[in-house]
Each structure stands twice: as C-alpha cells, then as structure tokens.
Length: 464
Ligand SMILES: *Cc1c(COP(=O)(O)O)cnc(C)c1O
Image (cartoon, rainbow, N blue to C red; front, side):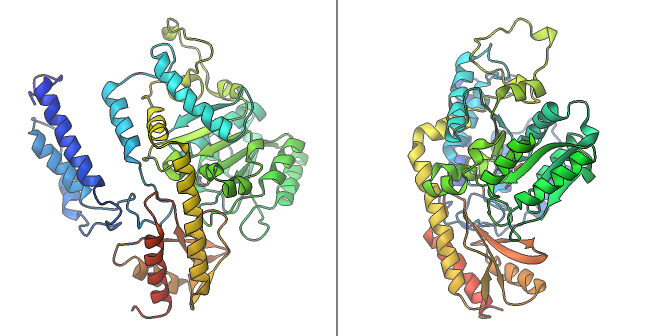
C-alpha cells in the first residue's frame, strides 16, 4: 500500500482483496472437521497485542499475519462440534454481504440518501413480520443482537405504558428468562426490585397464573405493570413459555407482551417449531437473533413490533440538521425506530444468504436441528449413568451424569477435553445441568454421535 494515499490504485486494491480472499478461504476450509478449540491458547499473542499500538505503516503481509495468528487461537464457534451455550455458525454468504456493505459504505439510517438500499432491507423485514403473522402496520428493525432487541422492546413498552413514571413500572419474567432482560430493565430505568420473577409450572416454564397474581398485586399497590416477557426457547433448556395463555392474560390486563425468541425464533420456519411457538403471533414485540437460529455471523439481532408507531413513539426525534432528507412515505427511516442514527447497510447480511440459499434451505436445516436434538435425547435417555431432564422442545438437551454438582463439572471438562466437541453447563432447579445445544448449520449426525459417545464413555466411567 502507498501509505500516503488512502485510496488504493487498482493493483493495491487487488492485493488487499487477494489477501482477504486467501484468509477467508483458509478460515472456512474444512471448518466442519475442525476442533472447536484451537490447540494454541494464544497467551503470548494476547500479551503482544495488548502492548501493540498503531504507529508507522506496516506491510500488508505483516498485518495479515497478525490476523491469521489470531484466528489460529481461541474458540471457533463455527465448527460443527460447537454444542455449547447457543452456537453461532456464521454463514459465509452473510459475511461476504457484510464485506460488500462495509466496502461500499452506503448510509441507511434514513431512507432519503439510499432509498433502494433501504427498500432491500425493508423487504427482508417485511418477510420477518409476515413469518410471525404480525398485522399491517407492524415493523421490524435490525439491531446488533438479542440483548439490544430486548432493551428496545422495553423502551417501547415503557413509553406506551409508563411514560414519565418508570419508577412505578414493573416487569414480569420466568425464572429462566435470559439475563439480558433484567439488564435491559435496569437500563430503561425499571427498579431492579420491580422485576418480578414468577414461579414456574414445571420448573421450566413460567406459570401464567403466577404472573396474573403478581400483576394484580402490583396494580393494587399503585404500581404500573409495564411488560410481561416470555421466553420462546429458554437459553437454559430450550423450553417455550405458555405463549397463548400469556398473550390472553396480557390482553386482559392491558400489559405489553414481549416474547424473547432470540434463540428459538426461527424454528417458526418449521412445522414443529411453529406449533411449539403458537401464540407468538399475538405478541406486542418479538426478539429474534438471526445470528443464532438463522446461522448468520454475530452482530445481527432483530426486534419485531406489532404496531410500528410504538417504536416511533419511543425513538423518533426531530433534528434540524436533517431537514433536507425527505424520503418516500413507505420507506422506513431506521433512525426513527431504534436509538441509532448512522448505521451500515445492515439488511444486506440477511438478504444475500436468504436469496442465495432460498428460504427452504433454512427451513430444512432447522428441521434437521430438531431431529438431531431428538436423536441426542433418545441416545442419552438410554445411556446408563445419564439422566435426561425432558424431551427437547426445540434443540437443547439438558442432562446430568450420576453424581453431585462437582461430578457434573468434572464430566464436562472430560467431555470437552479433546476439543472436537464442546458442551456447556447451567443451573436448573438449583442443580448443575449439562447441556447440548444443536444450532450450528454444520452440526450433523456424525457430530451428535461423537458427542453422545463421549458423554456415554464419561458417564460410564470409561474415561478418567
Ligand atoms: C442469546 C440470547 C439473548 C441475548 O442475545 P445476544 O444476541 O447475545 O445479545 C437474549 N435472550 C435469549 C433467550 C438468548 O438466547
């Protein structure tokens, strides 16, 4: 590169693209067969990088070597064997879309400057609201992840039900609600003591009656019930709260009904998933994470809202310096719908993979994940020394091996030791549980079989 010129000539641009191409191809090549955890931990590299500061220009190769070295360490969430937490597999077609969006750098915070780019995104967003059968006037937005989607939903709920009175606002969650819900409540100003954790039906799903009683008590105490947050796919166990009952309850009580479907939402594409998520179409808002169950790279969450005006009330603002940016009425100004003003052409990262692979490919892949989780459940249910919590509602199987909590931790370390598969643990009902989450698009029957073999061997004491 000519350091004096920010704009490379053709040859320099070719050089940049060729290095990026080589690096990307190297990183996706044989990814399915790679270990989840690289053999190198990269401790020394971390020390070096912490001490590194930008200064005089370096050669392109030297810079690329640093990136390559980093990628040779750490955890590859995109490996087939990643069955921990909520795996994120990162479709390469979406990554390339991102590269294009960043390299072409079209502004999409308002529709005026790039109406066609915004229209492309609006088309994908309409597909999302239609998938969840939301009515005309509903509005989806793309954000960086499920946490921010949950936060934006609570801002909308606050502005509708408790404007100027957030100190009296309360929200209702189940014991397995994702931590980001309580965090969002805190950010939007809800007092931490006003986050009501309601009892469960079966230790796993929130009891609508418990929610009803809590809401009534709070109303009697002069508080303002602001939102009920249901989980459509808990992170702990992949279970779905009773959405139909909760939707009815929220309608009766006049409370905002938010469904956190960050993990489970896109199972709506499958017949089985749609049945399990029934009631989600009655939500006031829905959190989705395309970077989970749509296999996209990290950085893509979505919030769907039944009435787009609720988002505009929460986020639209007037700025004198934007007065000369008119646009067509049917195009959304994204800055009126989220806290952001400037933003990249985010829609491209959904549009390109959906166009190139087609919706049916995603449906089939998600259906396959449900089958694989059912397979893992059956195999583990038959294994001696393993107790499985319940048949999976979506694609997470929770289980224990014989022994106390410390035995679970030892078993997990042993299962994960070779790095070809990676599971994680949680606490359910006061007990440590191991969990196997099938969500990477690369996870297949061979992966699940490998994992089950390791679990059986560890549970049977054949591996010390
Ligand atoms: C992952 C997850 C979140 C948080 O989403 P991020 O994209 O990690 O911010 C929220 N809720 C549930 C149920 C999740 O699984």
